[in-house]
Image: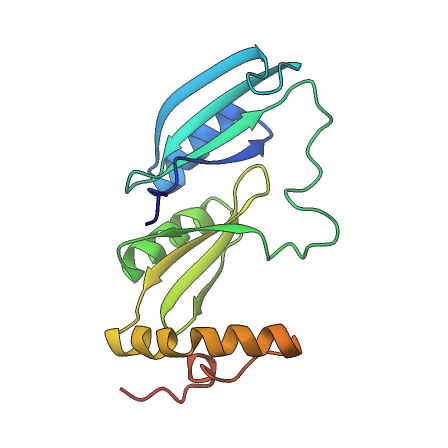
Length: 181
């Protein structure tokens, strides 16, 4: 029996807590719900002042950030050995229209947005928040048949990948245009 009940929150470091709250409100219509500030880390007891902010991103999901003024400035959200496109947070939106409205608003303010990218089972756009975290907005486009086809091959794909470290072709239809309803 599964004991997990969703994500309580996901936490990242940010450069500036106030700027982060305002950006997420302006571009993603996300609600600022909580701020916690302490001079000592509760779990480790280290003396380290921080501001911990919590943002409601919908569906009972919380995105949190830490501003750490006594630490060296952030260089990048990920390590040097990980490509910048890899680590990201994908947020679900209700439609492609909503996604494109957010894209237009961001681009009007000079924010670089990549996409939309058609992944067959969803379309998405990619951009960075003020701290450099890569975000994705995704609008589902999968049919029940597509989901069933992917479910049927997931273990075969994973096992083949584990043996060969080469992309299996069980679901090539997602990228080559060969999917037929």
